[in-house]
Structures are given as C-alpha cells and as structure tokens.
Image (cartoon, rainbow, N blue to C red; front, side):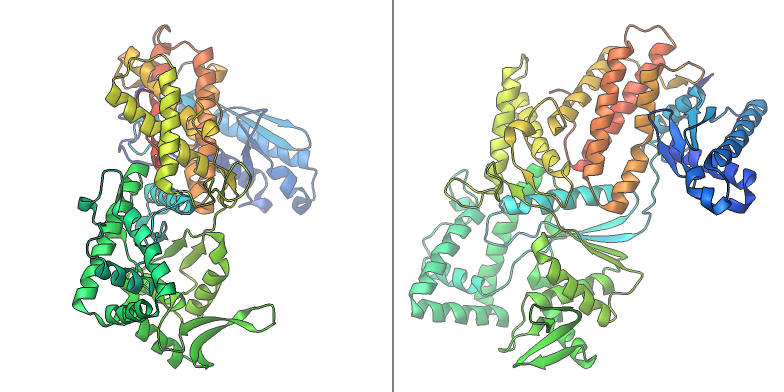
Length: 606
C-alpha cells in the first residue's frame, strides 16, 4: 500500500501523536478493560532494549490489585492481542505486531511495520513535523542576556544568552506566545561619571563612525569608563561634578539625557552585532532596561507601603522576608527605598515583575540569570506574592546555570586574569574551525569557506554550552568543541550535510511511502528515533533543559549513520529506494529543525 505524504494527515500542521503516546493509549485501554478496578492507571510505557516499547504498569499495580505482577501483565497482554486481532479484521492496520510478557511482569510491545511507515508518511506531510503545540497560547516572558550599557559582553553573558534564546525558540515552536525581554543595565551612578568624563574630554573618539575598524563603540566606552572611575577616585572636584551629573540625569536634564541616549544607542548597536553573529533572536525591540521602569518606582513603593509590606528601617524602606532569615536569624530584607530617597536594583526588579504581570499579561515568567542571584529572586518573588501581583495561576521561575570554566577548572579568564570578551571567544572558535575545515580536502571558494567556518565555530560554542545540563559547569575546550566526531555541534552539522548530499544525488521529489514494506532493523531503529522528536521537545518545554534536545539529536544522528551503513539508499530497487529516501528526507528535516531550535545553523555543505 502506497501513501502520499501530502494526503496522510490532511492539514500540513496537524499533530501526529507519537508512537509512544499511541502505545500508552492502547495499554491504558487494555488495562481498563482487563482490570476495570484499575481503570485510569498510568500505563508506565518506556522505550526498551528488548522490544520497541515496554509497559511496567503490572509491577506498579500489583500491590494495589493484590495479584502477582506476572498475572496482571498476562491479562493486559491478552487484551492487547485481542485488540490487535480486531484491528486486523477491521482492515484498519494494527498498531502492534507482537505482545509478550517477560521477567516479573514486563509487557513488551513490537510495533507493526505498517504503523511505523505510516508515522514516517504522516510526519513528512506536516510542516511542523507532526509536533503538537502543548504550550498553545501560554504567554511566556523570558528574561535573558541582560548586558550592561557601556560595558563589553564577556564570557559571563554566554550562557544566559544562548540558553534563553534556545528556550524561547522551543517554547514558541510548542505554541507559546513568547515575549523576549533583554533587561539592560542602563541606569545608575556610573553614568554620571562616564557622561562627565566624556564632556570633559570632547576630543575622545567613542562613536562607531569615529573608530578604527575592529573597535566597537562599547569597547571604547568600556575603556573610557575605567578612566572615568580612576579620575573619580583621585579627583574630588570631578567626583562632585559626576554626582551632580547623576542628579541631572535623574531630573531629565536635556543635554545629559541626550548624551546618555547616545551611549545607550552605541552600546545596543554593539550588542546587536554579537547577537547577529550568535544567531540570537534578540533585537532592540526586546530591550527593556532598568530605566524603562523608572516611572513606576514611586508607585510600587507606595503600593507596598500602603499594604503594610514595606516598613521603615534605619531611615530606609524595606520589605522583610517572612520565609528567609540571614546568618543572624533576622529576616532578610529587600531595600525598596534608600536612606537618601533613591531607588536601587531591588525596587527596579519589583517594578519589572509587576509590569510583566499587569501589562504584559504573563502566564509564565522565566529569568535566565546566574545562580548568584538565587536569593535575590526568592525575595522578589515572595514580595510579589505578598503584594498580590504574583498569583497561583502565574508560574515564575529563576533558571540558574553553571559557570564556563577554563582548562584549569576555574572560571574562564585570559592569561592576564581579565574576563574573556565574548567576541574574542567566538573568534577563537571560528578560527579553529577554519583550520580544521581547511585541512580537509575541499573545493570551497574563499567566501564559502568563511561562511562554513563561521557556522561551524559559532555552532560549536553554542552546542557545547547547550549540551551540558543547565545547572552544571563546563570547560571551554575549543579542540573538543570543533571536532567532527563525538557529541559536538560540528558532528550534527556534518550529519545534516551528509544527508543533504544523499538527497542531491537521489534527485527524487517523490511524496510516496509504501507502508507494506518489511522493515530492516536499522530502519526500525531510525523511525523510532525520528518519532521521539515531539516527545523530546515537550519534555524540554516542561523541564527547561536544552541538553535533552542535544542528546536526542546526537542519538538521531547516530541512528541515521547506522541506517546508512546497513541499508543502501541510492542503489536500492524500488519501492525500497523510495522509502529510504523518505527516511533521509525526514531525518534531514528533523535534524535541521532541531538545530534551528538550538539556534545553530544547518549548512548543506561542510
């Protein structure tokens, strides 16, 4: 029987239930009919080395049913076999080809070849690869990256930027209404120093059109800020002028605000260059820096005070935690107004979460911020709940992450002990990728070599970060990152290019899959791997752990390699050739989509 992949599911974006979910439904139905007293029980279906799937429900239910697990498993298996016979008689095509019981009560299920080929056809027919949208309509705010204005992005910004961008892509693909938020550090006393220094040194170049090639405005501003800091510490007269500049900035003095806006604009331009190079989706429209929330700060403090949540303490106004105490046993405070009447980071973050709930109408808020801020966010979330802003139907999570380490096992630094600039880190990876590609036999034009080196180097950095569990540290090892073997981004990119090469040689746009063909074991393994894509993404959307997607794609690439070594594609006779080309097409599409969700390019040549 041949099925046209464009007709299998009707609509191209239709969800295709995974084989595992279909098995779960079948086992659940069998339990309900064979053991009515246990109706609704979890079927406990897992992938298995001994079959395609395995149900361990009998072991979990034995005590409750007061029966031996093996007896329960036999009853469920008998019902599943009758269901399979009924499907065959009805001509609908059986889902399961064989059901056996093993061990103390495992129910092993082998899928029918027809069911597996139908899954291939259905996923190929969908532009969404059959993946559902379980997050549909869930308004999700993701706070990530958050560099400081007038300071260069460094290695410390790598993980928040890459992890946040990946999660925003995955959640959007799963149907969430994602709002990216780049909480820039664009306000504070440091701008008084910098603006006063710039006005005192009008001949200093710092605009991007005044600088030599290769020097960014934010790099120049970073250097000038350090110079301003040195003068501030050494010259009391300059320090007084800098403090007056802060007052002028806060009061909205036109000349001071204009200069501040120029600094912000130049910094954002430099950030955008890094985002574009990284393939990160953040744009200027996603920026909402600390200054954005200034108009609401007095209102937030008044609301907390009137509610009795913020109280006076030594001339300041604080929210004392009801849940968290310090080493001295006293409640830990958030300072919402300083003794001089000013506002700080605590107040801004309270205004931020209030805005995201009230104005952005968030159902879910994710803060991709380093682990050192864990206590701060616990206090902010607690205060927001006490104020009534954060209710039980809104999910808020601080997604902390581990540290990027150097070869010495310590936080990654330059040889001189300085923080590694993010652009320099990327240059290192791209340079090494270029060397490796150049060493291989190729006929690439210089421009194409440049593009491939850039895609491989950037992809290597991002994959090394994302393939590590979010909360763990990892070592920045550029040699391992750009390797064509092992669990690396370059290996996955190379796997994609191999499949693209096969498809170019096949030159076959056929949309037919013959569902009556007998499967080779390597074909079966590849189809089962491909079918798990949607379930993996659902898991990532729930656990917020991108490394699960990385692990899936690596396993998929290995499954394809095993398939290609065992099953000739181009030399096979029809209809086997057509089905194997369909597997190549689905494998390429799945790898390409998976890499895209990681924010990594999927080149067709490497």
